[in-house]
Length: 122
Image 1 (cartoon, rainbow, N blue to C red):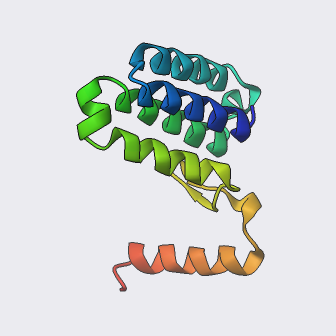
Image 2 (image 1 turned 90 degrees about the vertical axis):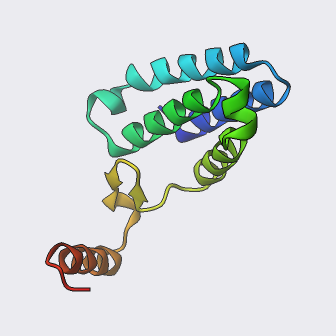
C-alpha cells in the first residue's frame, strides 16, 4: 500500500466528480478503499493505512450526491485531502500519532503537550 496510489485515486475521483461523473468517482474510491482494506499494512493495524482509509471514506461521503459535492464542501474536502497526501504525512493523522516521522525532541514536546492537556493544565 502506498500513499501515492491512494492520492492518485483521490485525484482521479475528484477529476471525475468535477466533470459531473459521480458514479465513476465513487467506483474509483471504492476500488481504492478495497485496496487499502486488503493491504498488509491495514492488516498489521498501521495508523497510516487507517488514515488513508479514512481519507478515502471521506471522499466517498463527498461524492454521495451532486449537492454534497457542489454545495456542501465536497470539492474543498477533496482539495485538502489531495494536498495533505501529496506531501509526506505529518506526525499526527486522523488515526493517531505516527512516531516514525518524529524526531526525539518532537516526540517529547508532543507527549508533554498531550499530558498537560489531559491533566487539565492549559
